[in-house]
Amino acid sequence: MNNLPSLFINNLFPILLIAGIGYICGKYLDVQARSLSRVIFYVFSPCLIFNLITTSQLSGDDMLRMIGFTTTLVLSCAAITYLLGKAMNLSRTMLVAVILTAMTTNAGNFGLSLNLFAFGEAGLAQASIFFVTSAMINYTVGVTIASMGSVSLKDSLLKLLTIPTVYAVILAVIFVSTGWVLPKPLERTTSTLAGASIPAMIILLGLQLQQNQRTKQTKALILSNGMRLLGGAALGILFANVFRLTGVAYQAGVIEAAKPTAVLSTVLATEFDVEPAFVTTVVFTTTLLSPLTLTPLLAYLGA
Image (cartoon, rainbow, N blue to C red; front, side, top):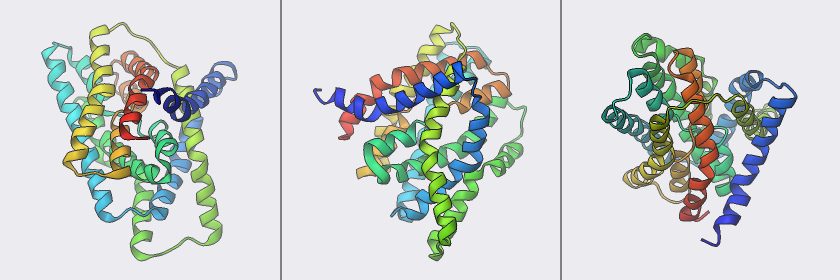
């Protein structure tokens, strides 16, 4: 327990400081989150994912284990939240909103940075597989849930074609399997852009939190926060053992599972008019409360 303050200061506090800078920029300098978000989405993130996969020592078996772990975790969070929400007699739209907040973990701008600080490049490589897998699920299953049937599964799958990181993964796998290497100018360009990803993602987190809306749906708010921060951690530990994750894969997987709600949930909620004020409040509250759960979890994982 004596180690908890240093774990917080060394691993979580830097993220909060950088996010705080983003918050201030959004509040006083009128910096718009959407512009930075698009640069991260279309440029920084694909380069980061490509660079991580092509330079990591992950085997095909390592990747498959993390993909299986992530898929099972996200879908289980959605299913359990659905059952609890039905038992609480939540309205249809509120139930959909709660499910979205429970299944969309902030594996990108928060998760990748924390894994880098706590577990180094090896943890970042494992977390990147979680990030890409969860993004694919969110853009298919998440979109389908948010649309409540107004968007077909075909259209949801076609949405994947607009995600640059999907192509980054495909290219990276090709390069790894064939032994190809990028020419030096392209390799340096890619690695430089990849290096800009983590700080840009954390700044974006602060910008997005500055735009938070508030709601008073207390019962649903408790369910969302509990499932994302506590339920996610518990399921992460359970499925990490089921999929026999070990070492840094275990650490990265469990930490990613316990992350606060991703801002993507607000995008989906706004797009399909599913309690957007409630969803943005969950993003805000889970992010603020996450140090209280992540710090002891880091201690448990031996960070």
